[in-house]
Image 1 (tube, one colour):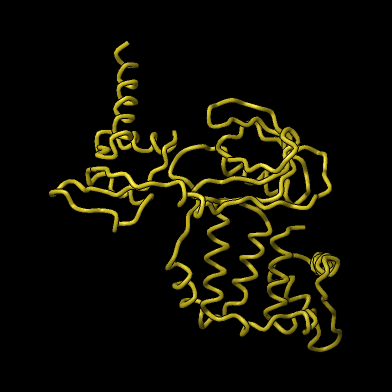
Image 2: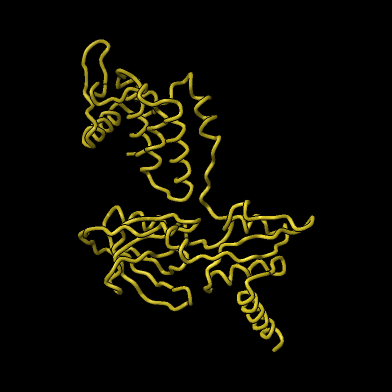
Length: 310
């Protein structure tokens, strides 16, 4: 029994008032016996299909179960299509395919072109240009574990490369700043933790299930905390790294300095992450002030050069 055929039959029954058994059999090029078996499977799944005998009879979904197509505007359908298509590029699953099929079934033929045009005006592709090839299959494993309340085990590397073995109850997938994470209760730490998928290796879904506990959502908005920690430093950048610098501050922080450079009032926190960020711009960036940050940059650059002098 093919799932895609069952979904298609449901869509047809939602679309039409009543469909004869022979018409369905001819449509899918299968026997009447198979059609009756498919209808039984659909009914067992909780969709109320009834059979009407006699002339003009056939199968129909009970009217109170159907949704009026007019409840969705063109903008509603476009937004649903855009969101489902974007997620399905990274996270695969029958439920997403079925959801897309259902949404498309609500599109009237005379509005299909307009709705498709609106849906294509914004395209979100969550797949990276390059990088960790484990991300997409790991997303599938985590999603299945979430649905089935299965424990996950894996090796986890912290920011310094130290590895630990973890067993975790998964509770939520998170996409934050182009990186995928999942939030779960870690048995090693006896607390909730946010795990970055790119730092995970040997991810396994265990057969053991768990009883979900009161879920503690991760803190993802650090705007207020960052504002208290950040100070502005002055950097001079080449125009070739302008787009990268714009990821951290707005264009009103920029002031042209000749034809090739900009002076930027750059938000900065004195820690490893921000120093590494400035160093990543290479010779396209110079820290002008304050003096202590400039001096520390010189020391770090000297240490890097010393490695190559050995």
